[in-house]
Each structure stands twice: as C-alpha cells, then as structure tokens.
Image (cartoon, rainbow, N blue to C red; front, side, top):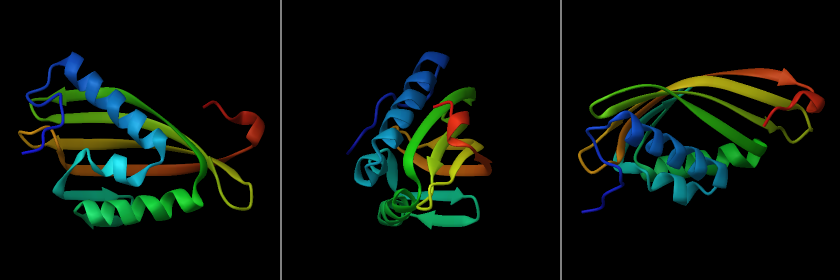
Length: 136
C-alpha cells in the first residue's frame, strides 16, 4: 500500500508540511510527480473542469503547462481539520503570446488514511499583469 506522509489526522505542523510538499511538486511542473500525491481514484474540480483519477490528472497537467509557461506557485495555509486542509494560493505564468497573468484561488483538500489526496476542489481567478509587476 502506498503512503504519502504526513498522514491524517493533521496537526498544524503536518498540514504545513503537506502544503509545502504540494507547492514544491507543482513548481517542478512534472505531471507524473505531482500525480503521486493523489489517490488512484482522486476527484478534482479545477475551475470548471472535473477530473477522475491519476491518468486524467496527468493529462490535464501536461496540457496546462504546455500553455502556462514559466509557471511559479505559492501556497498558503488557511485551515485544517482531521483529514482536510484548505489553502490559498497564487501563481504567475505567461501564455504563448507573452502575456503575463497572476492566478489566485482557494483549494479544499481531503485525504485518505494513507495521506493521498482523494478530493481537490479549486476555485481560481486570473488577473492580467505586466511582466514588471510579477512578484513570484
């Protein structure tokens, strides 16, 4: 059985560890590495896209990072309870025409007993920015 430490129930310290691990994985822009944090049958809502399972997650992330270039993410703790963590985040990226964006959002995460994320619900808004206004 695969486990992804830390495992629930979370305390603040282990929730912060989980958040940092997620930030590091996403900043790698490696879909296969990112997908290892999710259960085989993980459910996602990312904006208006609904995904199920690692294969769909990997395909989604490959497509995402083919369009969102120079992606850089920062996640922040919001709250936790037992097997759930809520985060705020922002990330910056540019499209293939060179236009920069900052995307803001919130995520609600639910983990199984092995520490794999079984549910991820993300609400995200995009803001056009100038390259000189980048923060990340």
